[in-house]
Length: 392
Length: 106
Image 1 (cartoon, one colour):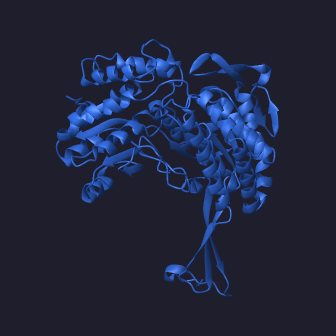
Image 2: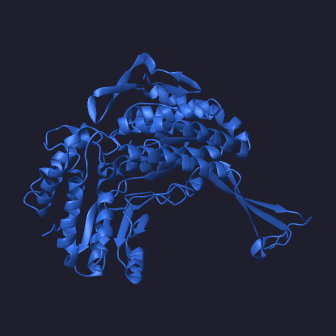
Image 3: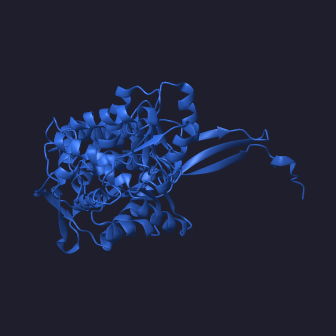
């Protein structure tokens, strides 16, 4: 697969044909395709295209815009399995989760299609009987959508479809770790007959391609999902521009509180799903289990026992619960926290051993598959000192 | 994964909120009052009772507090971010009348 940018309704290479490879994180020898390594110039072209298209797109009725999204749903429904397999291969999500990713995207698009027929303003009272008062909505213009790899299909649709249905035009930059899924999404919109220039795609790295989409004076709104570090920079940049608005979804240090009266079976299953779905790399993955001390012993044993049952492996294998970490950086990060002195000798390591025993890959080499298990530990060491009393 | 013990509910809340992020949260209990208190005092954007911390649906707000978000969660609240909400007031009288009892006399 040879990936392209999509600017003004045309599939184009980056200038000079610059590109990089998208690889399967479960088998890093497998190249899934090449992707444009865009320069700042392509980002600017995409914004210009979105800006030029904005007047014509906002001139369409809500219903007509909604119908484009409805046709997009039809296209995606016809390709759910193919898209799910691409997600599994490029983002390393277990096939069952990859399918759910597509279904969630469909649901969001359906919701926004339905929303097109809903009221988009309010009739309000006035103190003066001779006054009629209303709240009306106007689209803002060009929206930049910058999204992560962990929901490579659903999250972009969460952000793109509300923007489009309201009459905005969009420049979309997917994560450099899931570019081909991003391209697939845009291709589905193209096949749905979305007019050229309404949705533009630029592939590349954050600094060179993403940042111009944040600071460009013609971008009115930045919708971002990713790390706090990047989100904080985006918030700062938008605060400095009198026109710009941003909405950022960033990380979590999510916790589950298991109370004294908890149903053990339910608690353990909930904890396992929270901790290890998407190999612990969801925004809402749990990294802290705050357990009543009277239940800690039985909970920890049951948690480890269920963790042993988890099958780690190729996400395309239907039996697999947990795929690889997404990239080399994630593997190194996990390795770093696992080997941190604070982790050593903790009760945690006992669970780690149990985990490895239950996995299909027993070694702890740098192979991404084998390093799936310690993901949760990475988060653990972030817990502030005052509450980091590991058990026992 | 950090397993952190607590003795009292107050202590659990203190541990829970003692991080800079506030996205997902879950409580496992059979007791309505316990869950209700935690729902109120724990800092989160997406909360669950007797469920995992994962499991979002598209029509529910998705976002977090503190370092996790910007106070404008995804789903329908995003419609407010991508549109300007403008007031549009129309006079259908021949005279100008002002609100708050303000005089229109010149």
